[in-house]
Structure formats: structure tokens, C-alpha cells
Amino acid sequence: MDRDVVIIGAGPAGIFTALEMLKKGSRQRILIVEKGRAVEDRRCPKSKAGQCVSCKPYCHITTGFSGAGAFSDGKLSLSCEVGGDLPSLIGPDKAQETIDYTDGIYLEFGADSHVEGLGNTEEVKAIRRRAIRAGLKLVDCPIRHLGTEKAQDLYYAIEQHLLKNGVELLFGCECTNLILEGDVCRGVQVRQNGREEEILARHTVIATGRRGADWLESLCAQHNIAHQPGTVDIGVRVEVRSEVMETVNRVLYESKLVGHPRPFKNKVRTFCQNPGGFVSQENYDNDLAVVNGHSYKELKSDNTNLAILCSHNFSHPFNQPIAYAQRVGELTNMLGAGHIMVQRFGDILDGKRTWQKELAFSNVRPTLPDVVAGDITAAMPYRAMTNIINFIQAMDEVVPGFASSETLLYSPELKFYSNRVKMDEDFNTNIQGLYCLGDSSGWTRGLMMASAMGVLMGRRLAAAEG
Image (cartoon, rainbow, N blue to C red; front, side):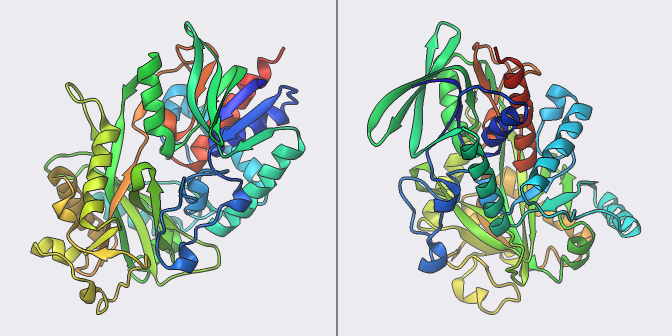
């Protein structure tokens, strides 16, 4: 094959690269390579089976057109303060301008026009005062909530738009390596149906998302692509009754709180809050099961779930943060016999495990049906667990009842985006013709910022035409 642009990964960054090229009138031949399935063919059998069946070769929740984020909660963060470190590369003004532009594209394809977290000024001030007293920072961030089921419809419309306008989508195709001549990328090697093939292209865009972070890290090491170890997030998914979060859910929808609790003062933050949502499981390579959260537009539970993530940075002599987080997840999976584990906060403080029968008598019933009660502290590193406990207790000052003895903590919640590829503000790497975008690049965290990065890449490639 011979193309002008080959994009590896059909997540938001890759999709919006192609979309923006079309908007700019580019006539270049664009091919998107995706190892998962088309969005209309992505179905998790858990809703019928009642438990995770470890789909092979890839989990439908994490892999396929629109990526992992669109099949979780479908929330677009509309502030450049949220979603990664891209503003430090391109400048906050340009980042915010691009987010606003990208949001308009989402609206064109059917996103809900309602934005959560606007107005309610006095109530927001009251929440911020409580956060300040607790030593936490409340980050203002309007949210456009797509909803898990609505996001699938929206991305299907985008998929069909790309196909209609000549963008090729190659599903069930895995990129195995880059084709390099010196310090110039000439394309990629792929495998489909057991057959190896080369795809030559003037421009190669890697946009493989969080799931592809470790794969990209191995490519960087193999081909001397300039990069540096970054941050890895290790944490838990917390679930409480929605009555506890009622005010915050109504006023903010998603409370983005950041703290640096004693004694370690690592950055700890809330992430991906789902009012009336459902805790979910995602499977990564090597059968690693991690926890996440879904939030639908129509279907609601009695609970609210959110992640509490502790950021870890490593320096000499250790430089494999992704491997470190994977080991934590593997140990937790081992204790849970391959399942997600859950423990009540009160049991953690009391130094005891949670038993399955105890969950039946709690106000908070797990929304993940096949979760296994146990002791997550037996696998969670001491530093991370201490940070999480202290952060939850600080959160209780902002949201009274959050640190209830019945509050549920699911583990492991891991975010793999630690490998940061070095690049300039035009996304050029030290390899000519190679660009790295989205969460796998280490520069973004989430749907909107990855989409915005794709928009900027699309403009760059369209301008280079001819």
C-alpha cells in the first residue's frame, strides 16, 4: 500500500486528525489503521452474560473506532486546565481556542447542547470554600456529557462521514512496527489475518490511546524516538450513594478536586465522575482487568462513582512507570482471582477485609455485578494507599458522608500514559515524518484534549499538502 497519511489508532486523536484534514479541503490519501472493530460492531457481552468473558483478541470496551474513552462515560472537558499537559507545549490560549473549535465539531455531529457546571455561582463558591478548608483545589471545568450510549451514535456518524469522504478505515489490523530509513519514517508494518504487510506513507501518525502507551514506549526504545518517562496514575474507583453527592452532582456534575495530602504530598485528584453511573471493567493485554466508570444519558443507578488517582513519578535508576503500574494491577487481579476487587472504606480503616455477604447489608450496593469483595490494601502500594485514604478524608469535608464506612473502593484503577514523546509545538518528533498524538503520546488525558490535538495535527498536515 502507498498512502499520503497513515494514522495508527481510530481513537479521538486519530479521528479528528482526519476530520480536520477534510475540513481544510485536503485531497491527500488518508488511511486509518485500527486493530479493533468499527463502532457499530463493538459490543460488550457482559450485559447479557452478567460477567466479563475476557473477549479475544481485544476487549470491545477499550479497542475499536472511537477508542476507550467513548465507551466509558463520554464526557468532554471544556477547559484547557483539564486533560493533560498539551497547553504547556502549545500555550494555554491556543489550547483553549482549539478546544472551543473542537467542541463545535462535536455539536455538528449531535452532541447535547447542554453544558454541565455553568452558573450556580454562589453554590460553587460554597463548595470551593469547603475545598480550601480541606486543603484541596476545585478546578472549574464545564462538562459536555455525551453519555455512553449517545457517544456511540455520535462516533458512528463521524465514522460514516469519514468513509463517505474517502478516508479508508482498516479494521482488525494491528501495527507491528515502523519503517525507518535513518531518521526518516517511511511508513508502518501491519498484520491482518495473519499476513504481514507494509504501508508506505509520507506522514505517519501514532494515536493509539492509553491502551497503546506501553507499545509506543517499546517503539521509542527500539528506534531511539526521543522520549522521557512521565507520570503514571494508580488509584481506586470510589462509589457512594448519589444522595451523598447530590449537591455537587447538581451544581458541578463533575467535581474536579486536586490535593497534595501529607505525608508524601504526591498529587492526588478526582477523575471521571459519573452521577447515577455504573462501575465497569476493562481488559488490557495479558488479561489485565482494570476498573472504570460509565454514565448513561437515560439509564441511571442509585450511586455515583469517581476515580481517585495518585500520580507517581520515577527517576534514576528506575524508568518503567507503565510496567510498575501493571504489576500493581496484576497483583490485585491475582488476589481477586482475575476479577475487580472491592473493599469498604470502614474495613480499610479497621484493618480487615470485606466479605461478600457484608455488601448485601450496606446502603451502597456495587453496580459492578461480578466484583469480588476482599482486601485491596494487600496489593496497593503503601504510599498510594496512604495518599488515597487521606484524600478521601479531606473529601469528606467538601462532601459530608464521602468517607462513610460503607463507601466502596474498587481496584485497580490505572491510567497508562506515562511515556512522553519529545516534540515541538508542531508535533514534530526527532524522526522526520513521524508524529505522536493523544494519550499514548503522554501529552493528553481524555477525550477533548486528544480530539483537539488531532485537530491541530490535521491542520498541520493539510497545510503541508503539495
